[in-house]
Image (cartoon, rainbow, N blue to C red; front, side, top):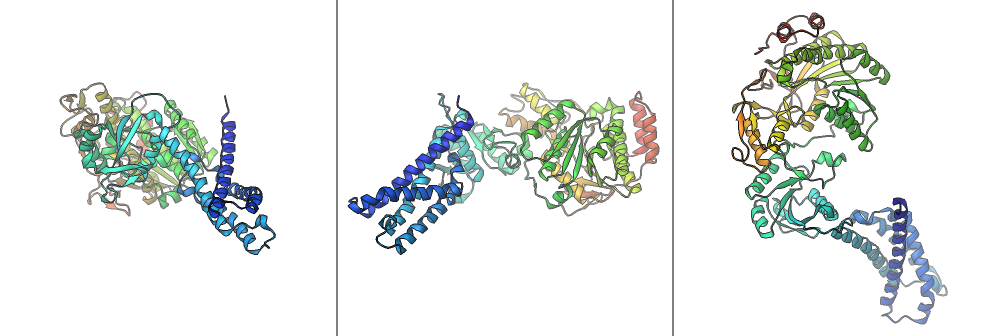
Length: 619
């Protein structure tokens, strides 16, 4: 078997030989045209040496600019200067020789018309063989010649992402997709041809085009598609009984986590979320770049996205703390697969192990702590209230106090909307954690303490969306608490980008609140997910109502109205007008929490939390 390195050498040698042949052919054709294919004897005498001299000069200049390093499979107009410039430079001494050398030096005195034609023919031949190779590669794929019927598809979106997707789909023969054409709602693109593929109409024409061309599916190829656009296209496809798939998000493509042709089904996150995430925020860059950052709960849904986005801003080092070994292993493997990320350390540890945290802070000279570790599942924490109190409240206080001891510049607490007028142990424990942070902010001047509240995120572990997805896959029923239950939803990338932005806006002791948009009824969410699966709610998949579970609210509160929050410079981030006065002094509360012991029951925990969070209303 030929090694990849040897194959590469063979390919480059073949390329060099072909270049020499086409350049010699270009020079010969130029001479033949100059003399009407009747070469004089004097020209025939000098032609071999002139050809060798000109081709050698052109090859040396082309290799000097690195044109032979350009991949034939991806050759484009952007690579044209790598051939145009050396060919033009090679013509300069030939013109000088022709003008200034005496007539006796006939070997170097090439006619100006030959020089001019040789430039154009040589450039055309060099570019032509590369375009031919690329067209051949795209036409016949990656060498997979196995038989199999190809499915006709439409690409929705004829922009840059659509062009890239078309190219990759052509090269990927294993996909067995035959791109019939584009649809695009831009009037300027109608009837245009993109890389040989025509824009056949708008998205409203999908049903008619599907019937005419026997379309098997539609692929949404809009890298920054809005939720409205995706929902609209998905709805049109559903009405025509055609499945729709979508390319990865723009951030996944740019960060190298997904290839543009890594297609997937349109999901609820695309319809409800997919707002563009700005990963070039100057304030966040100043906050993170060159700093040593510790992220607790790094293996969770929010924590892992924090790691990805923070890595984008190039911190000096990341200390990732996660007690779930499997979650940390997956995150560590993901980071290993991404080239060029900043150095990190994957630490399997409990953030509540303060001695271990102290050792890590000292070892790595941490400057920023983002505390995302927490228990979040409301009904589960009702039955494990001691752990909710220990993990969500005591750990936050002890780690926050350690931050002051070690002069950490910023301590950011990731909180929750369930801390607003809490009805659950989990929510009350998180509200108590906020009060702990405000207490530390008031009593320590070296560290800036900020908390950020937000609601549900789409697709997080333990959320309703993975549950619905599994229930649909199992054939139903889909279980909904109540037809009136509503929740706020935001994509994980958008929520995390706003959390990081909040860290730059929040002042010491402030609780920042994210605007989660309009609340959505859970029953509507269930129906949309069933429909996106190509099924009909109530017919293919039954919906059952189960009633409120322990600790659950019918409606969530975010406190972003003008009475409870004040705006910041960012339209989706507010400063909560939230009192920082606890029911009892925070140190006393923490001591009582520590003394209560691991055998305490829910009633004891609720009684203690009520003394700290008097607005709580436990069921």
